[in-house]
View 1 (cartoon, helix red, strand yellow):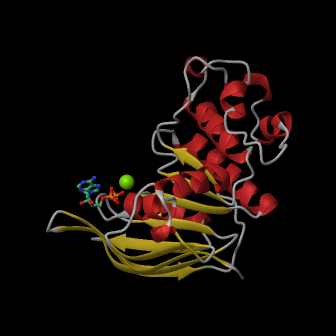
View 2 (view 1 turned 45 degrees about the vertical axis):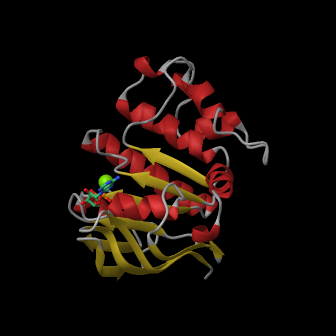
Length: 227
Ligand SMILES: Nc1ncnc2c1ncn2[C@@H]1O[C@H](COP(=O)(O)OP(=O)(O)O)[C@@H](O)[C@H]1O
Ligand SMILES: [Mg+2]
């Protein structure tokens, strides 16, 4: 299996005493669903921000498909994020003045001709696509966010607490949606959460504490829908 991400002695410090990442070594295989678990402040978001090129390391190195992220310029990191990655955050980051459909269209890059209608259908938004964000429920807004990242056929989708603001039922639907994408498109999915129930959907579960990876679990069951 190809390695999509690798960290070597990755360190991210703030000031003298905060090590958000403390000498982390990590390999992630392409096509995995990775769940990163840990208490608040353990470094989960920092890890995600490093892999997705939103932030840079203080020490050590980060690689995306054997390219060094640590050596990329701001502009190269921007291109990497724009061309290769999808993001699903707790705060959906939708533009309020655009409909769901228009928000999804924003994710489209000129690199591919992904079919807007197809993506809208895939996430079950056909009936709601012409509504504005204020007319959509939390779960529907999150589906718009997922569709927006899907339309560019990303290599990886990063999710930071994707179900945090949603009720449990809708959270499960969203997670199932992400699993489906992983299965059908072979997209690598990396989910950060403090909710241990979500760990069930990962085939790799990484436990973090105080900026360190304290345990990694690999599971054989690859596509297990939550119930
Ligand atoms: N921009 C920042 N400036 C200073 N400290 C930060 C910054 N971002 C994160 N931290 C600190 O780094 C540690 C890890 O934070 P974070 O990665 O956000 O944890 P998590 O996502 O697991 O809650 C925390 O102690 C946090 O306070
Ligand atoms: Mg966080």
